[in-house]
Length: 131
Image (tube, rainbow, N blue to C red; front, side, top):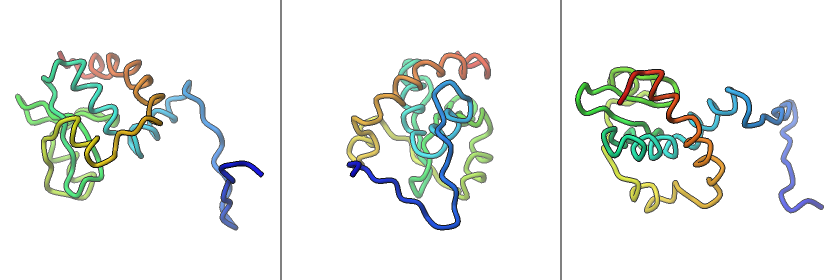
């Protein structure tokens, strides 16, 4: 018996396996679970120019440009109010990487996501003419 048995809910089809080569995998990875990893990576690549922020309640991490109050995540570069609206909230907090460690968001099993975030972060910054 496998150590991690797959649970199949009757009536639902299992998701197809998606590899790192597909844009869809990046979208799912960085909008539905590992958004904090992309935010941490973008913060580091910009030497802290882009601040790390998290919605309240803490459902989604993103980067904040403090000069123009724009938010950056995998979905795009928009006024922070638009991002908050999309996540059905009106509040966010600026945090540090330690916030995610303390609240157990960043775990060792995210190593592949950190690698992938480092691969795509420069192109995200170029696409939006940041730094």
